[in-house]
Length: 346
Image (cartoon, rainbow, N blue to C red):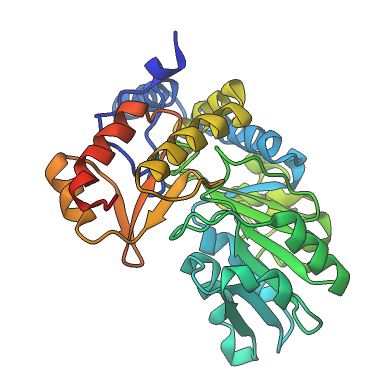
């Protein structure tokens, strides 16, 4: 089967930065699990096996060991233990358009003197100076599509001993990224990883694991899951699994085959496909090429023109945002440009 035949998008879907479309293996796995659930055909353990598969696939995608990967439901909840481990008065540096799931978890500790310093994206690396304790930024910005110079952030942070915490929700699945030099990398899987909403995966470096308290620990964080249903005896997993939240089974049932398919296709292949389409769209708008699958531009009337043409994109920060993934086509690009043609000045 050809790659393109694994999806069934209606023409004009340019909004993966909001949510991704499931590939057929993920959709079929989810339908089978829902059918079993409806009639009680199985226990929950087969569904939970998908959590292990997703964890291991995510680890391979980001170049991590699976014992340093944990699962959860949201990015903000995944960041909460890290924020709680910061000392009073710590300073956190972030982008001034950072998605709030990577801002609010730090800001809620303002009563302890935690200060969030937000600067324009182009200034982030230059502002990583003595006094900054943690850098919290996205690998790819949700609103603008700007791609972070992660090696530069890591190098600057290493010089001053600052922690590096990356929200990779808009990156993993199309943008090659590894955890080299990173202390935490968290990604929700419902966008570029094309999974159901509710499956978040994250990497925690061993040194950061030791600093954090697994304050949300429950039975699923135990070394022996099946032996930890009841009672006061607590023996947590020694690795990042002690930070697991009990998974939403069906979200991970859909996530595992989607992540494995991304591995099979290859992130580099997906990256080339996405950038080719995004840059074709940018060229049609008179914009310079970029290294992002997300195109953000201020074009008055674009939202209405897209709506009239049946094209689904988004508006973020007052700008049109179109995003291109593996199931997007050149026909989608041309349809979008045709809709916008009356608004484009030559």
